[in-house]
Amino acid sequence: DLPYIYAITPTYTRPVQKAELIRLSQTFLHVRNFHWIVVEDSDRKTKLVENLLEHSGLEFTHLNVKTPDAWKLAPKDPNWLKPRGVLQRNLGLTWIRENLKKGANKGVLYFADDDNTYDLQIFEEMRGTKKVSVWPVGLVGKLRYESPIVVNGKVTGWHTYWMPERDFALDMAGFAINIELLFDKPLVQFEYEVKRGYQETTLLRGFVTKEELEPLADNCRKVLVWHTRTEKADLRNEEKLKKYGKPPSD
Ligand code: UDP
Ligand code: MN
Image (cartoon, rainbow, N blue to C red; front, side, top):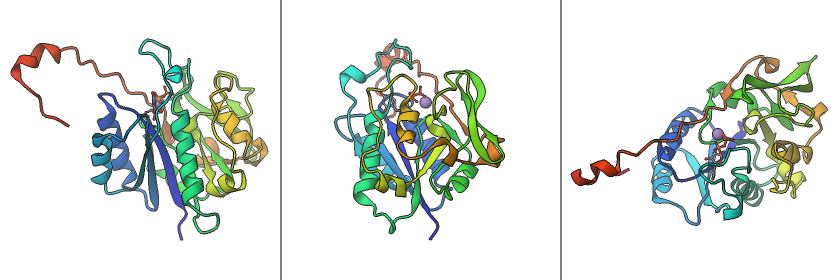
């Protein structure tokens, strides 16, 4: 009766996608009682993701929902302009609410973006979350790390350069939620129409107060998750080699 970890990963088609998902899946294989909810940002499920999940050895759910064009970043847009993964994470929340039962299914929800780096220790720590647990995230906010500030075991504020006055000034990778809260507050989800940087705050306000947060990772003294970002693949030589025929497919 070890509580489950339900990890929601939004993902979208681009050259590095398979590498990202392989790296993630092979990390997750080391975690017991783990259920991976992969939500493709697309009109239909792709063969690539379907095959990868089928062969991953993981317990998984494969979903898809496309981000409307109006909310999609253009290639040259700065990434803060529009929130990413909103509908995909919400579909993951809906899946948990519709397919799991309060009491019968015990576990925590975690938003695991496909480009981050996860130390296995964070999964064992988050498993015991009573309401919402929090911890530092490395390489984010133009800092070595962002972190909850912990005084006497309680979160009192945020070590964050950008808008530390937010109720929950932390990254998507820096918290986990006991799924019981999803059933108790069935309407709480992400919204598009929130101020920039307020996605996490909007969601968490619906579930807890700052005083209730449970600091993990040695009272937030350790970084166990990194907001790594993958360089866009530069494929401009592909065209030039076309005459040699098709490369191996993936
Ligand atoms: N994502 C998505 N559709 C998009 C862009 C991103 O589903 O059009 C996913 C992406 O695969 C990742 C998450 O949303 O799991 C966050 O995106 P990204 O890592 O690009 O955001 P950042 O790290 O810049 O905040
Ligand atoms: Mn990212």
